[in-house]
Length: 324
Image (cartoon, one colour):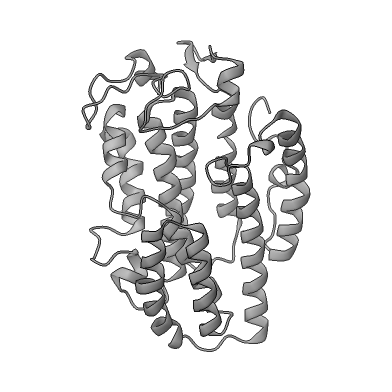
């Protein structure tokens, strides 16, 4: 980031665009990285200086808040009851740590390079979770890779490539590496597959098939909904048919864990203006109330899921990042 700031980015990225520091701002829009009216920038357009080289952070608070992602990595280390292998666990740890850097880069620099980093790392983590969730099933490109043709690399391989990218590639090439890595970049389809897989293990198939179809039609783009309904679900039906029937206790445990996870994801999406564009939510008073209530809401979700909470700072939403 320091190198990118001191050189003011690049005059020519892999798409033949300029990508200068602060190039994606409300007053200086770039259609590749839409930002809307970022309140923090509007209230403080000069940003904040950081470090010995006085790096201008376009969103100082959002930049610092990404330290919270490191807590996700350490909590993976704390949890001892994973059913996925250690390689997958390590890939998730590294990816959350990489997302901390990537999201900080975006909110600090407002460059396309940073925007690509932030969004693609979320896609990587979702893809790792999906591949772990179907790892019991026999391999197929549609079921395992969410593609009609076999991909060149697994999610674990992609995550490893992105870790190496830090020391093998100059910063201005990061966007190309991220944009061209072989995985579902728009993660609507990945989340839909995750939900479909979870539902299929605890619901009668016909009801699950109908419900996922309805939810896809309502919540995700038409092309992705068509893939899930016409490609993914038929293959999932075959795979699930070969899974031994879960006991009532196992189904109850899965339902509780899945419900707790969905509660937290839906509450997070509520405050994402691109997912739920309700403008009345995005003012100082409502946002403050939402932040305060997140402790209670996440506490309810954790109780329902039964997952052990190993980080008191996360539980209490305190001391998660500098200057909070």
